[in-house]
Image 1 (tube, rainbow, N blue to C red):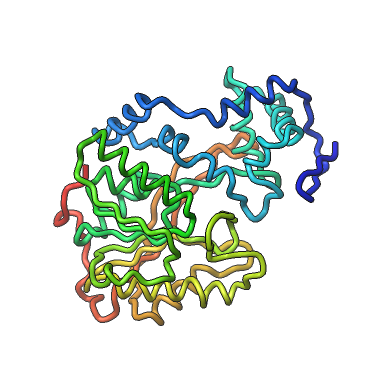
Image 2: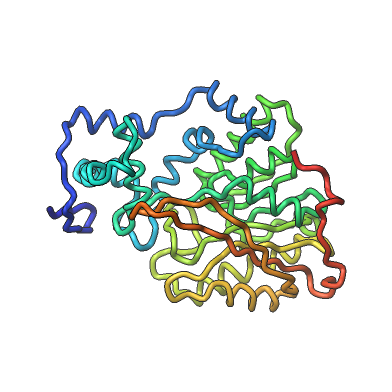
Length: 344
């Protein structure tokens, strides 16, 4: 069957018609908000260190924005799938192909599994940064409890900061995302009564914030991977027509220059970025960081979760983190696990 939508076309073997009533029900369920009680209970679990999941938080504040983001190798976003019935029917059909993978009694849950495991080329969910991985970075590199996030992402790093009472400073050009992050911070403070500092600016990280100069002990993020994901909203670092060299010169270099200005002596720049396609992001990040005055210290490896791939087998997803320090202070590099504020 051929599916055409928004100028893109696929020829797929997966097709199973659903009623208009079922279609509308699935869309409504997918975008349903959790109750306030569910969100508060999830936050309580996070604060008590009995869990690290933020599914209710993500669903309430970030699902629509995440769904609107398109990965470069896909023809559509998840929002497009739920906006166009034939695309949703394509994933609906896939849920009948493997009863060992699609085991839920919920049609929507099975469709979301089909998108997660077999959506490449059509539509895929973008990743949120795991809270437990942020906490590992805090334990190792949090120097003075002031942390700058150059690209705010989908709330994972903010939640980890709020949970661990780390002062959070962030920039992101997605104005809708910034509104959501600020609202989440207000909700967290109201329902936990935990003191929290969160200064989030709606701008790109390539624009200097003078008030932050010499303030941060840690700059850490997973920045845009050139055109890996199209966020569509705000003055993003990549737009159609932007070349790789332009992206390096106009986004990555000024971002790292600003981080150098924000950091105190002995502060850390920690970057989670990987090569993709033909783009040598790791090598170029190291080169530009050193040009900005940073000293490369080490790679730090984070074990991520084990995921089920579309063929039903297990696959590991490890994170390779690059760590830098201001040049001239590398001999003072040490680990801070026993000297920083206790993480909760």
